[in-house]
Length: 320
Ligand code: GLV
Ligand code: GLV
Image (cartoon, rainbow, N blue to C red; front, side, top):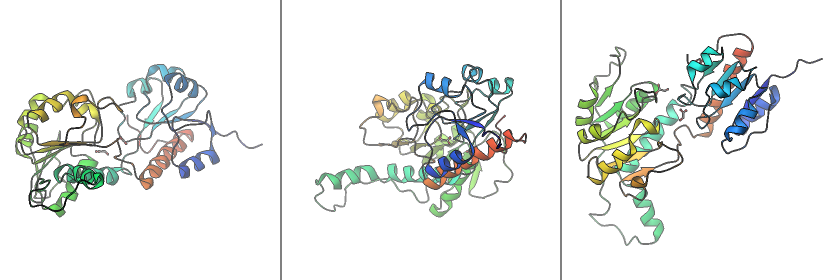
């Protein structure tokens, strides 16, 4: 008789190539849908699972882990894992993993899409043409900010921050970055490590790339925004709570910084009132890793981690 398939809980429907792999090798504890599971559905879904794949909308805390006595691994379908209580998992002997590397390029690309969109007023221009109200080219229409040659500030020079910096070479932009430690391997002469305040004072574009931890919650708030240049732009593709949205709304009203482009929000999917229908704010619905290739690879990384742990091996992307 064939061995029973390992029981897997998947919180959300993943791209079909991943679902096909899952159906071929695992017994699903329930049939996932597009929407986030309710807390009750999550607690019920993990009940018999030996492994779970969850996303950033599911909070995995001690209550969930307690509800899943057979659980060996929580594979987070994301690089950021602030939704997982890693200490609680460790205490219960459950491995937690993430999906680094495979989403670095997609997220860095989207960061540049946002940077260009806010500086060159892409959404405003699109809306004007689509509205039928465009009356033709004028020398003064929708003037934006120059990008090439300006200074890029990267808060958090991890994999994604670095990939964003690498793309700045084509724009001939000097890069200032913050990082807890000097990184000797970052030897590009156009890249300079500085303190946060100096970066905020000097950069024309400030882009956030830190993970969300208790230390980085509201890392950029009222005080930090007030240091930015009135002509500067802020981009966030990391996690919403790294930025104090209320403070940003006030700062934008006061004209400093000049604009902001956000892919992530403090209380997704809610948008802070002060950031709604403001011309100098560009918003996207958390699309950082949203390419088909990347989302498939993220699923395969989750499955590789699960296979390893269920076979008694070390998970390649264990986060503890
Ligand atoms: C998405 O936000 C991720 O952390 O992968
Ligand atoms: C994530 O992979 C990061 O290091 O920024």
